[in-house]
Amino acid sequence: MTGRPAAPAEGSRLLGGLGAPLLLVLTGTGLLHTTVRSDVYLRYVKEGLWPYLVASGALLSVLGFAGLAAELVRRLREEPEAGHADERGDEGPGHRDDDDGHGHGHGHGHGHGGVTQVAWLLAVPALALMFVAPPALGAYTASRGGAVSGGAGQSVYGGLGDAPTTPLSLEEFIGRSVHAPKTLEGREVRLMGFVSAGKAPGTWYLNRLKLSCCAADARTLHVEVHGAKAPAADTWVEVTGVLRAGRVSAENPVPAMDAGALEPVASPRNPYLDAPPTDG
Image (tube, rainbow, N blue to C red; front, side, top):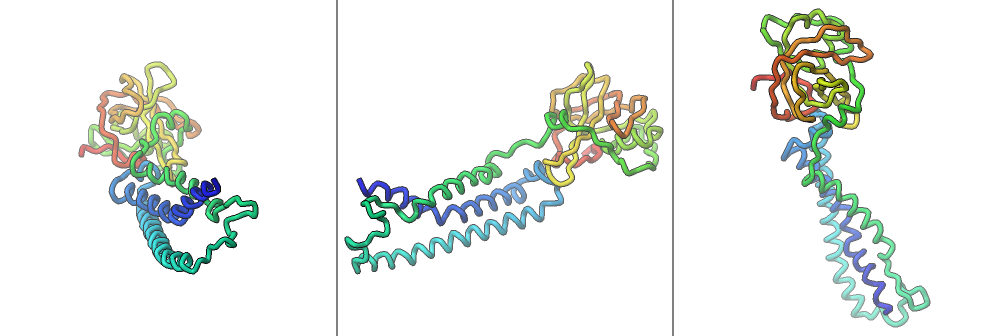
């Protein structure tokens, strides 16, 4: 019976030196998978952070593989030394390193099992980066975030040209409605965003989420749509219409538009880049 407690210690010694470098490898590989092999990283951070994420992923992977190599070399060196120790009989009857004096063995690695288990739990989010990519923020976030004013720092807007319909980003449309509504009077515009439920019957919101750095600081751009049946929440659409008359304040920058046409579209590659819709 005294030999049973040695099993956890052996398992701890087996994995204890591998947990940290493996975690580094998994995290680095996950970062590289979401940046080099796909565009999944755009669901979390701004596109401008791509080089930093790639560099971080590469560095973590290199450090992890270096740690694995060092651990394997250490173990290969220990095996011959352990064999020589057994031949010399160093662990004779009087050897009591693993004995507490009462005949109960306690392996040296016994206290490291918890650290190894925590390391493997930390590997779960790293694996999730590769196999379980969550969707971008959408209607749920938009319905709970306060609206922000588009182009709040701008006081002068140029003309919209002579085209019958002008594509605009939501930020510019909102900015013009707050600071220069006359530039939108009678002008048909085309906007793109995702759908969320409106507060009043027969209305719904066209939304974009704008990031300062990452998804945690997402801010919502809202346009209230009238005159068209609401698509399902989180559906990406292009809406053609005109600004509805009425003052839009900077304190509550949510302009309303009367929709003349609506077309479902595929979600953009970068869901947080508020760009005008294109014909491409």
